[in-house]
Image (cartoon, rainbow, N blue to C red):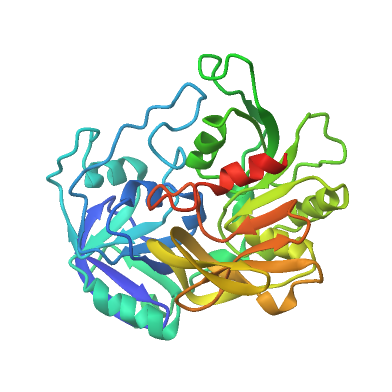
Length: 371
């Protein structure tokens, strides 16, 4: 047996799978029907207990942990599992997929990540939508005392989670010679705030050299040669990334073309003097519709996007010269901003997908055009 205890004292009982350990974090939900290995290894989920709303999880197993020719994960979005636990309605240990080498349960045991199945995830999700995401604890015991219910859970958003997931050193990735015999087309500095590996794959397959740098890397003293700046996705409160924000300000002052994704969208907004705020329950899934804006108005063009974020940009506080680029068709929150010069822009959703649709994949090419 295992139990989920929410901060408000609500209890959900189920069956334990994965590692038989206790864990706590921020309880959130994801509406995607597939992509659990990618979601669980996405650094943006650092500090969170992830609820999958799709009822059956684990039926296609998990792929190998091998690395590609560049030295990072071939199949996952990082080299670690970053969720602190997962909650599902039904967990399958029988799996079938041509890339699978292990069951979800065995993989989680190996990485010491707990899970609970048999939970009414619909009821849990409705509660989180009504009250907002909240802190919770997975306990490997069905004896729940009042003392355990009242035990303090530290809010992961109070920590600098980006510093935990960012690379420690500068790493340069060069496109393969067999794909680009004439050499790299362009080069970028990519701030690793918890970068998904498919972002790296997306740049490399376009012939771009990527200098992956730590979240606090100093551009002013850098000896790297680059044509543009990229700011990655990542976990937690964007206002904790003060050093990254300062570097973005420096780059904008120098007129360096800049592109941000997810957390990168929030950091760009803060760097230009805008503001961010925490969403009630966030956007986590692979079916979020976003409207393109032109000349200050929404167009009829809508793209379906992959998303994973709990904070958003305040569209009322964009400075002069900056415009709304995309909005969420469901709740009208800001999903992208850009400067009138066309040199600086960012989006809240994930153009690289994994998991999810590739409607927004063209944005990588749009950035290349201005380098």
